[in-house]
Image (cartoon, rainbow, N blue to C red; front, side, top):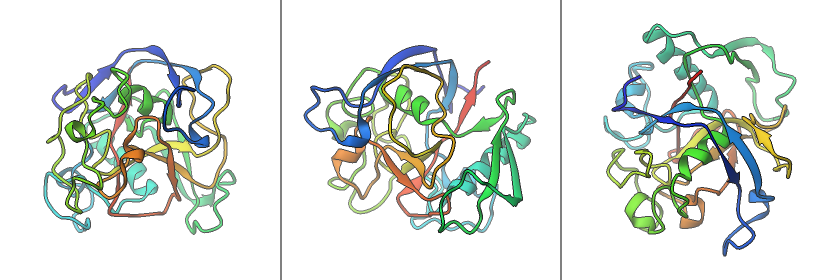
Length: 253
């Protein structure tokens, strides 16, 4: 695993969601609950346009530049890229992608694809982080934003971005050496979006079914509220936006 581009996240237990004493919190972020996470790797950077265009040569992000985060990518695009990257590096693809069978767990009436996507937990390839993995990695150091309580140190967001995305890794990292987990572009996660359970969980992967997929981290065009590590948002699996990209994860045994 190339530590220039990926960081190892040790197993641990954390409190997921907003704490009762947080000055800003919303119903999607509660109840705060205990979650145990196994070890995994996560990308230090959001996937760039240069990386993505090795997969789809003709892909056009809204803002263009090799080191800018890729955007205008759906959840399905992100999943397909994970498998592509796995095969390029001679790893076992994580996702089974069946484009012919409609997924009965996909309740989104506006999704014309509804591909059936399965996850092989034994595969060693690349995948999207779960929502819990994403928050666990982002919260390292327990700051409001990913790496600092001063948003301008770590985040491109509505008030400092000048209305555009920026090259990855230009702000400070969080304590794990991960960049842009707050801001620049929202990031797709694996999970269907749904309410939190108060129960203690181990390696949760989200609801069994749903209409929307989780996105995390905020973006260059959104307010500081959405850049908090506990903030939750969502999008339909086929949604594409100049605000929305992704980063990779990989299981570690």
